[in-house]
Image (tube, rainbow, N blue to C red; front, side, top):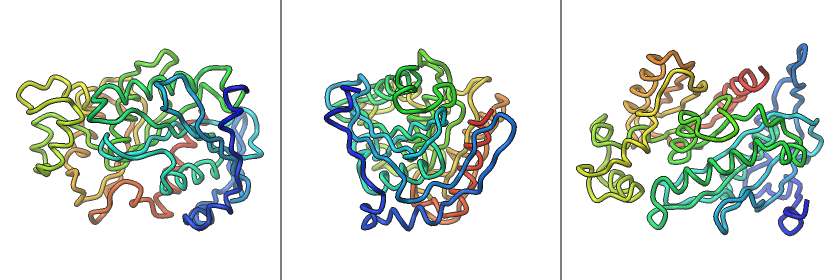
Length: 304
């Protein structure tokens, strides 16, 4: 516990009401679900979420994660690695919308590990992905499971936009020392960073520049990292199940999601695609009904 001594910060969720957290949690109370050998999924009240901030997981200097968990969680709860978006160049685990997302998932009975990662352009691909692989291996360590009360064999990932790209790669690569994820939820992710991907639905020029900066490339002509950073080109049989959410008119064309789903289905990977009307992006897509479907899907994958 020495690692947590300086960073531990336990606060009541009511103290975050100004950020809209209490309203979010009130809308998300789950129905209990029990069965032989299954975890009991009781609703968690808004004042029972514990936050542990800036935990060192063995990544680069200054890169930490936060933990959100039910204060009265039973041992062996399933875990989620949660990853923020921001075009691979911005964003932080402590931003209000991500604090709310962390608390929402914890309110559903999950132990949530919300991690930062190194950002472009100073740290181009694969730096951020490497950091998250380190975080995932740390989460799946038995010692950390004993500390935080989660089951290291039942871990899923959740991410939006650039974070959705990264958690998709984590699931598809199976590159961690500890094994594969049980499931991946991604919202509005860029899924094909190659020139062919940019042509799907005519990706905006300004976001193409963001992608190239992240990849450390001037153009697509000589950019081998574009394919390596694309979940679309990492699909193989045996990948974990995916739950994909994408708006019809997102600035990241929905055609990328359609093509990715087709590739997953071709590889016999279980996948759900939720196409949402409008031009919403990332966490903005999470209305109450969609949150419920995501939680039900995560429970089905993590209770096995």
